Length: 372
Image (tube, rainbow, N blue to C red; front, side):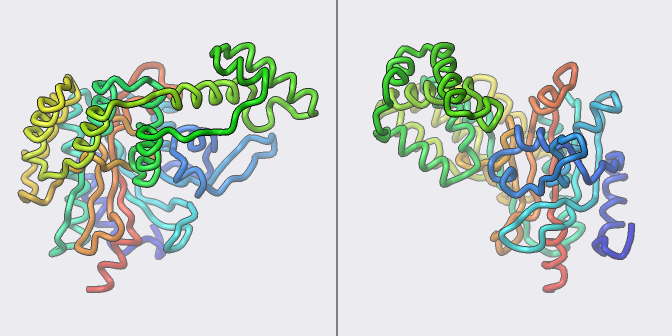
């Protein structure tokens, strides 16, 4: 640790040790592909990219979750395991510098997901309370799994469920997707034979036609999207445009997204919504209720933890809980995190490993400390 580290850094490291989270150090230079494939559009466009001597895509680490998970896989460490970190990340930002410190905990392999989720929220809250004594903190929770369960229960086809799930966490993208679902936009007609191939859903023939056209135009199939990717997207877009959601189903989705209550009221509010809409949310609702009970067990102040059904975070790897913690001004979150049960398998783990974690923005915390 050196003079560049935030003044509160040593106290944070002591808190992590007391919470049973082993300190881990991961390289600043990381393979770029995992971030480009799994981190979400918002983070992808902020990454600082470079290349190795062999042409491999590299980047300065824009966050810690993916590097910590990769390190866990490469060291073949056992689970359950809790990792903590405190160091610099590098990404373009609308405000503040492009190099800043983050600290956090990644909790891997605990099969009691309700307890692990609650512990992550409580640890993030404890860290902020340590750094910002006397500040009022508000926790906002969302749930990717509940959102996806509602979409499935409404009978939306897989393509629409995937598009809406990707939009969850971005108010603008979600509003645009819902607008298209309510009144699909018309697009210019495709030329033949592409139009017929798209209409028939013949992916292989369409990909072959696109590949031939690219070859004739002198374009490399490996430059940008592949013929298979282009064919898949064209067919998917056509399928999405053909879907018309009933007015009752659309109104139910809007009612769900409007739910915003304290966490202790949330399980009942979701049950009431599901019953009124005639939907079954199954295990997603049971898991939500178990988590709410576990969070309450950590003694966070009543009313300081809120559930917002429309709340998500703009990272593609989240699968369940998502949360942020804000201070009194609530302009920018001080901490954020969530559950990512599919991430380690996608990164190369031999078997599924559940995971949940959080990070805090130390530059934002320092600014609040200096303002007092």
